[in-house]
Image (cartoon, rainbow, N blue to C red; front, side, top):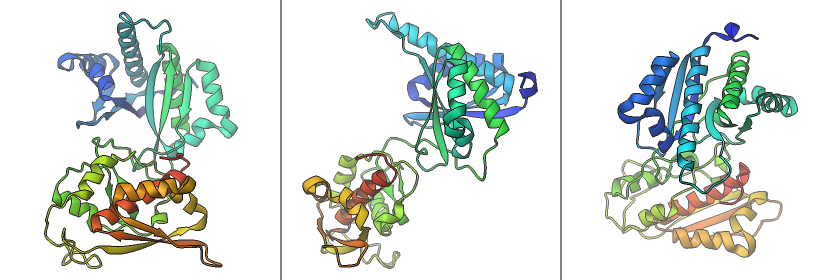
Length: 337
């Protein structure tokens, strides 16, 4: 396929750290302005004080390639500048992270990894497709690293694949969240939403009682929790108005509430990751949450084990979150948290 034959409008999304974004924007926005003018591509940068930002490049494919070339050479310049005062002898490669709908990643990898191997060999760039989807999205990160020329050739080949295999079904785009503790929503879904240590947010944390822990075996990666923050929050004894009236099934949520009890059923084959070696994990969860946690012995013929959590609503909620986090890491193959 010739490059001219490839000249259709396309959108490519890049995931960048704040420092990289600063380099692309330049002083008073001069660098990004120059990139837009010289490449002819639309370059948008997501708002927000997040550690990660999304850079969206849209335009005809030749404009996209020019924009990518300018970004790759700018990053190489940054590496060269950082090495002038450095004792490092080997020069690190330029690295870009693309965000690609998971439904297109199969075509990018190819049967038995044939396509990705072909791209690596023909361009000289390193290409890796993340195994997990980015949080709360149906997109995966594709990391490309190498010399700027290799990266440009690699992006061209990835564009060809993306044009030949459009995404299937709806794509939930990845939106970086501010760095903060996760909030638990109904169904045990965890989202890294901003969470300040206020009673209002604590009530939000407790209002949605997660369903049994193993309903959260999603494919998404769960953000590493800022547990100390969540723990402090759960330990706070800020008086707040009972939510019982508005939240049936979770009566009078009040700081002075007597200890309540919550039960979970966990499949037998997943109980090990909750208990840990010689009870190390369950003890850690007890300590962090401040809740009492009892695991019933396996009932004959049952495929599940009963877990009883006792404590204040805040303690129970935190214990449930920690159990969910253990299960998610086990199910999605992320390894121990």
